[in-house]
Amino acid sequence: MYAVTGATGQLGRLVIEALLKTIPADRIVAAVRNPAKASDLAERGVIIREADYGRPDTLAPALAGVDKLLLISSTEVSGRLPRHRAVIDAARRAGVLLIAYTSMLHADTSPATLAIEHRQTEQLIAASGLPAVILRNGWYTENHLLALPAALEHGAFVGAAKDGRFSSAARMDYAEAAAVVLANDGHAGTTYELAADRAFTLAELAAEVSRQSGKTVVYNDLSEAAFRDVLTGAGLPADLAAVLADADAAALRGALFDDGGTLGRLIGRPTTPMDHLVAAALRG
Ligand SMILES: NC(=O)c1ccc[n+]([C@@H]2O[C@H](COP(=O)([O-])OP(=O)(O)OC[C@H]3O[C@@H](n4cnc5c(N)ncnc54)[C@H](OP(=O)(O)O)[C@@H]3O)[C@@H](O)[C@H]2O)c1
Image (cartoon, rainbow, N blue to C red; front, side, top):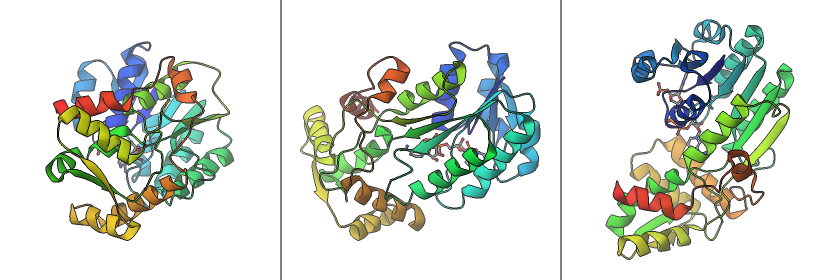
């Protein structure tokens, strides 16, 4: 049996969809914090089990009989380590044969604050002795495009990455990669740096939005502190704003760039180009 945690999230749902192409629904467990949010998956025959990282008592029943598990990293920007530890411990006790984990690009060397808990989770997985696949995902292109409405309104994207290059890919690309390593043998013991075939700067993103929208949109580079203030002003919690501004600054140092081509090779097709995602976002 295959299980995906966080399966009601955006990435998790895409992984379930990708798995359903080759795995029967009754062999897929959507391990979710809130089963009520997964009723559509239940209707399609996917097994729904409650699995709340913060309530370890839910994890043993959720993982009973599971052979291959995808642990999707928690959304909490700090304090996720105990939650990840609870899932890893439960997986070990349940006799899971493979655990895959959605880490962050270059988590072992990244200067980004966000990488710290990913690095620590990778170490917990290694210490658990479980056969594992580490999926070091780059940024989602969709993240950049969350700012699209504001960029169109104000004529500018803002950030603190200067001309740092982002090898951001579509969530769907990372989801397909996760499904590939779960559904096929031969990936245990591997750490994959997953990133788009082509990188872009935030100025190039702005130029593409200008080209497709017909409106002038530029990229305004700010200091890390000023960008953090913009994010909190837009309503983001202070801790999230801080790590996102920090990640932009880290991108300037190459933290979110990779040109190894591993993601495209894993999914057997080119990664989704940035201009396709811009077009989709502009269509709404
Ligand atoms: N690479 C990137 O650019 C990037 C960007 C953003 C996030 N991420 C990471 O990738 C993960 C998946 O991204 P996403 O876009 O799918 O995020 P998302 O749509 O916010 O989904 C997160 C999922 O995690 C679940 N979750 C949160 N806390 C949980 C808990 N205590 N116990 C069990 N489940 C819990 C949520 O459950 P509910 O459905 O009940 O809310 C949700 O299903 C994120 O959690 C984050 O670690 C990566």
